[in-house]
Length: 380
Image (tube, rainbow, N blue to C red; front, top):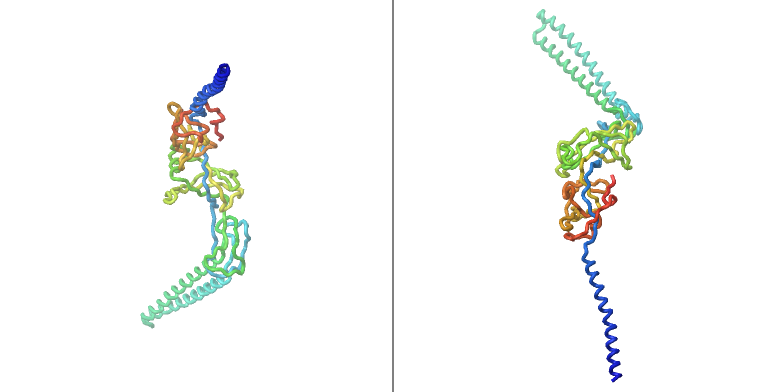
């Protein structure tokens, strides 16, 4: 009996020893389940309302205010080149001669024909005077007088034709001498003395770049905003030019011409800005970007890192009733520093998730926490 009693006692003791840790394990599992269902904390904020400087840049095609292509007027041989590449020239200065010697001879021949015609006309007029005297004395018939008069008229016509030939030959001579159309700088000279050239071959170009014109295009929407001043900057009184190295040209320009037609293919409108260029820094054909700057009052700003993009549209997670978040599409006007200037999607006072949007899904409940200035700040 004592042996059996000992066995049962040991069994009972062993069972209790095993049951105790199991019970204690169940009591620790309940707090972990509650912690898993607690909403996560996210910083939230409202759109910032402030005045910003709007800066828009457009690729520009820079041209000298005056630029001319000098071409051969006819086929011939270049006799002389009076300038070199890069030379500054004055209006009317001789640059090239093409068959000028032969043209000068043609003028001399035509002028000689005029002198001969003048002599023949004087002889015919003398003959007419003598014939009139004889006709008055009834020595010659009236028909003879009429013939002599016709001879005088014929000589006058021939003399007029010879004079026109001289004028035409002088024009040809002038065209054989290529002159600078205005003060400027000579560009590359493509042919030298002795070169045989065809008609309309370009010899060089002359540019007057003391003023330059920058041509650029803006979208129809931006044009309407600039012209009406709706929700954006009005047309600025001055514009800037960003050079190819990223620096700003030191002289401001003005918009002095706007196209009269929207391009049907691109939906853009042509603009022209004029810049002074007294130092000659800009050259014909320079590249750059026209920069339009203006002030936009009471703009709504949302940090770019608070947004996400889907199918080309920009969204934020707006915080609604019960702290539920929902994706909200934004109308983005343009970037300003590290923020978006928006036109629609969020109103003043509405809240959105500032950081951690990649961890959210539509309809999730969050625990909002205040966002620090560093979180919502933007750089200008």
